Length: 84
Image (cartoon, rainbow, N blue to C red; front, side):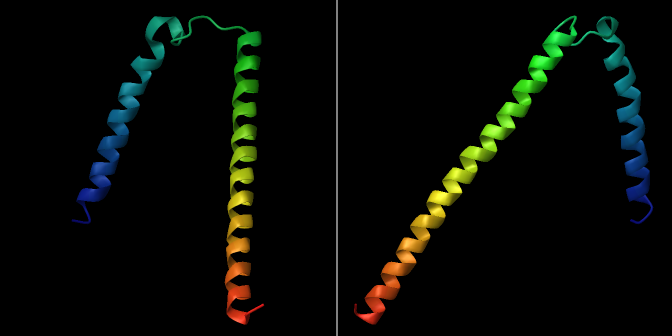
């Protein structure tokens, strides 16, 4: 059993590396988008950056609202327990 795991890992790594070279060499090195220039790369990178900033802002806002709601419920339970 201990011998099979490293052999399986090495075989998987070898097959992955053997299949990667032809995949990168197809179509003269061009990807799905075709030939790219600096402007396309810059705008794509900016879009990825803005996407993650928006995800962080939206999820932080949602978490803040949920925390506020939790605190309000906790305060209501404490108020009901004391009788005020």
